[in-house]
Image 1 (cartoon, rainbow over the protein chains, first blue to last red):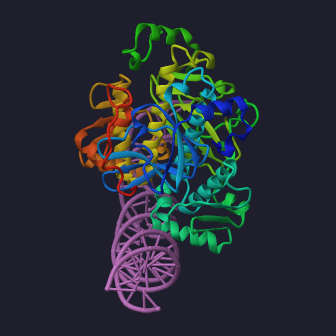
Image 2: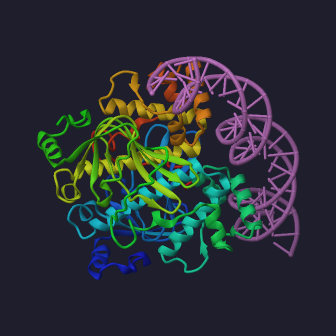
Image 3: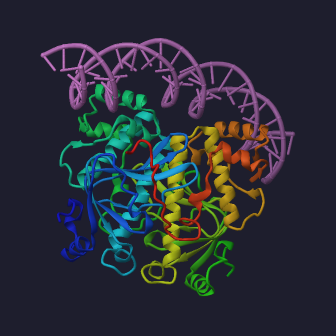
Length: 245
Length: 245
DNA sequence: CGTCGTCTTGACCAGAATCAACTCGAGTGG
DNA sequence: CCACTCGAGTTGATTCTGGTCAAGACGACG
């Protein structure tokens, strides 16, 4: 069992625990649902290879993608939803996943920290997405997403340069960013014409990363564990938010 | 120490653990920052009385509120942020909070389940907000938020009917919903003129709850622990999402 | 009484949605 | 082998939701 590159820095004992605790490793094909089987428990799903995304689908037909999962990411499935909204997770590309049973992941286990960190990380990304949607226009939003995916692709060991695979349709991107596919297309054109990034054929080529980051006012700190090396670093925050005094 | 109504159903032993573990109970005044002191650890903050919200503030001056905290809610502070975004939590009204030390909240403690549930709940709300912003127009979004706050006010024991205090400015509501204060105002007028809800003076009066829920296509399941009574209930999900086959 | 902060309203503008058509490549079947 | 379909991407024309700008109302407070 080859673990995702994300885990390369872990202590061998933890890597072994992770590998050993995996049950029900299985492959899924493009666009298959991953959350139909593991739903009856608090088991955690580990992405071993490929991409997936989680979404909320409304009865109206609208869909909001709430998370993208890359190799090494952990996924905490939710009950299938009720009323006019359905929760789900589905494979973007061909996908290899494993299940970590509830019991092996909770209090006092070797994996506790990993799982906890993943929860915190997932929440941080969700907050960043919320801020992205609420407070940036379509162009900046698109740029920000590309920056995030680029950084995460590097962290997942999927690339070392400015090119990576991103097997999402423009319609998917729209459902991530709260835009229509047509408008995603226009934003992509704008990025292309500005020599900032080329997106298409399931691939992203970043032509001018600095520029892209500026457009999306991207700051990667939310993708890294708190405070760099030290966990929970402190800094007195004199400035604070101007509106909260 | 009077615990929020949310905890009334807990076993007495857990209530005692909760009360006993609280350190540094303190009061804050309107609009004071709560995250400046507890930031140096993974301590958890419990809202004892009053409202608070967490936000991300951009260098540009824009702000996105990422969570509203009511009495009984738990809050997991994040480092103060860097680059062009600042994270923070501030008191909406006068606020009483307590701190639960990291060590008393982790693996094997009496509070483990409570804390875990709170994390899951916080994530569920965040996802609902994301979907709200991404896939509903301003009117529906506003209605949805009012429904959520109403349900949560009931769960927090702050009201038993269709009226409750909500000490947020229209500017705050805008920063929750990704709208301008002017447009929030228009949506409030529309709700008022449609005899659906009256919002103002720090108070919400829901005149027609059924209608309000319909406008916001509100479904409260995400505010309740998984599956109602049973934890992690299973239901085979034949329908699934139409676009993920 | 004047100032300040919040709410309110109207007029106007712009960013994104909508609608509709066309391109292009991959399959598919006659 | 070619016509056909189908799905995804691309583009333009038009509409409309929500933003921007600016002014006034109103209550709290010094």
